[in-house]
Image 1: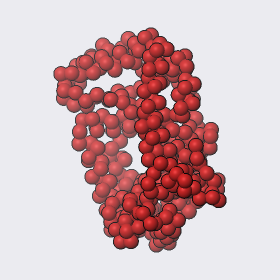
Image 2: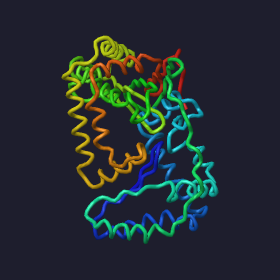
Image 3: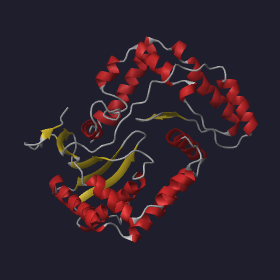
Image 4: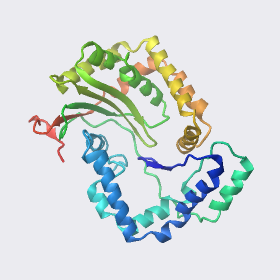
Length: 351
């Protein structure tokens, strides 16, 4: 299988140990011998596949265009995170055969890749297999310099309205914050958990359980390699409005900024984080993914203990500080409304 995001592309196989040579051959064949066989017909075929993926994930799914709309407002146009990884239909149509070849030649090469192998195997035997299948693949050209970006707040409060084929409106708050593993990254994760991480979290308990005015609520710190953002997402129940949700969310944010969190809330967030670490490492596939993740983000594949320690060190004072530092700053507010219910007076994000 495979996945891609704003920071990396990831191919992976999960197989019985006796199939490891086949899996290595498949990956090596893709890296070393796909380029000579790539032609216009294959590019056009895959272009249509990706366009259909875009329709399934963005254009024809409820609230699907919200993420792209937020990215474009949260980051300047020159920022590498200001657009979705999949690109627009125009981008996909414009990609030429030579564009695809040059991209593959530059980035899908041994000098821009790492491989993690986890499971039942003999270390020396696997090293010989890796050398056998990957050793003859030449290095690619020098990787272009990575963009240098400065993480900074949104310049001013931005209000957007997006019409979509949905039954219920939805409210999004988004802020610029910090990149992965930066000092304030872990406290922001804890803040997100306290706000909407479980059924006892502040927003879920008040909006969904006690007042019963919202269908659901989420909060998360999205920290990436170059930058990061924090989001709160609320779907009101029928008969309630995004304006009501905004008022209630703002009240809870003010409480966090004024009073901070309790030690019980902090302990619950830290305990959940520990459980999530164990879940991610429970399978061979999870271990392999984490090894590559840590290697790419920190340069140290075995970074689990250091990563977990970041969350153990978070204090209630840290959480209050980051909420005041980042969530009191200007933000992007996006309201997704059913078609035909655009509220005049706010900037439209209709596409």
